[in-house]
Amino acid sequence: MKTEDFPKHIQPHLVPEPSGHLIYRCLGCKSEYGIEKLLYTCSQCGQVLLLHDPEFDRLKKIPGKTWQQIFDYRKMLNIPSLKGIYLFHEFIGPVIPLESVIYLGEGHTPVVESNARLQEMAGCKFYFKNDGQNPSASFKDRGMASALSYIQYLIQQGHVSDVLAICASTGDTSAAAALYASYLQGNVKSAVLLPHGKVTPQQLSQPLGSGASVFEIPGVFDDCMKIVEALSENYNVALLNSKNAWRILGQESYSYEIAQAFEYDMTDKVVVVPIGNAGNITAVINGFLKFFETGIIDTLPKIIGVQSEHANPVYKYYLEPDAEKRHFEPVTVRPSVAQAAMIGNPVSMPRVIHLVEEYNKKAGAQHVFVAEVTEQNIMDCQLTANRNGHVACTHGGECLAGLIQARQKGLVGNHETAILDSTAHALKFSGFQGMYFENNFPEAYEVIPDPGLINTTALILPADLEHVPEPGKPLHGESLSFFIHRISEEIAKLLDLQKV
Ligand SMILES: *Cc1c(COP(=O)(O)O)cnc(C)c1O
Ligand SMILES: [Zn+2]
View 1: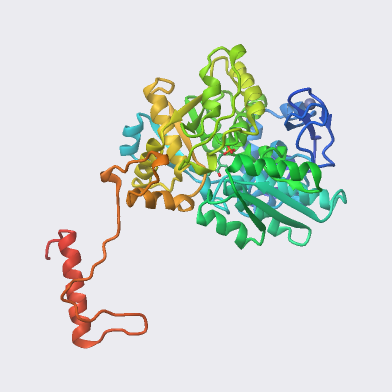
View 2: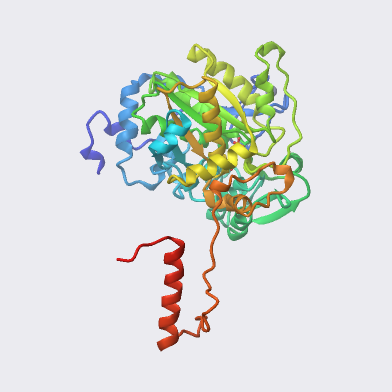
């Protein structure tokens, strides 16, 4: 549809111009910094930063109802830069001109209702939001679209040139970073640091395929993160981990899309997300807060963060009910099938502490909860979901396990509707499915397959077959007929098929 075909009161807002103002703000000492330079931590106190729009209140001048229409109508436009996370431009990056936006197909991922069987198992209605259907097959593309659009903006403004983008990763951050950086090839190069043997072959193939420099480091993610932090403090590199506040900003689109998918009615909604480095839950909380403050939604949904008991520092922190007595302790992680969340010292913890308090206050009651699940729960739930039409990754399984537990504990009632984040595509973690089906999980995972969920291939090779086809050597005549007859007979027997 063309601009002039839209309602008159929407037309001026349809295609956004750069507006507002963004600054980095320290969560600790409230120091503020301009965005002409890439910054990750406060030079005064060392705390992480968030991007803040000091002119945010201008957005409140437009009624919430009008915003809803702006976003809904904007979806009909055929402008690539508005097809992804920048559909919500005024909230995602109001200072970024559309010419700087990189769109590789991210965002607006499907929200898929689960079938009756699964809903009965969970004890309430629920959906998976398939963030594995992003271009690099995880939600990390949302944050990278934001971070790399910003870098492209800095390049176009002449603030930076020849950028080396660098990140530590449990697999998906590096896949997304390498993909988006490769689009800016010529101006941006990327390097990724991965814990040796702790990312799946699929995840490893992604940055290699995008042409990044890929370094494998002994240890776990937390070790890689320390090295990347040292590199970003001592060398001229652009850090793309979620310490980078632009990542968080882009990931807020997840909340906006959920609001839009449910007609902006967040009554009795529960948003369930896995927690690793805690960038995602930070973004999800912040996103809902912004839509709430501008009247685009009038209710804050419940948010449930889920951790594996093998990587549970955030869960442990919130075990203490008295906020005054809480004390954050990093944990030593153990092997986890929710491998992208296998993080013992989440970089965004200070952001989470700050935002959870604000969220609960604005909601008027505790609305953020953290659940802990076992590795066994995660695998069983992932496989069960996928046997019922989903493409959930292990973290999606973790969300389902968290929802079931939240229902059992009464944190979620049967009248509520949950939206579970399948943060990546099932295919990225098919190795864990393979270990389950072959019953060869290393002991440290503590996963024992449920025979009812195991599925393996069957080789059909009857002993009385003298000739079988091979590549370049097809069968003919009698031997072909016998081959077809015997193989189909065997399959019919195994499937218990009746003759017509
Ligand atoms: C990064 C990642 C997570 C964890 O998200 P955080 O922002 O680090 O908490 C969960 N699942 C997948 C698939 C991821 O790639
Ligand atoms: Zn500070």
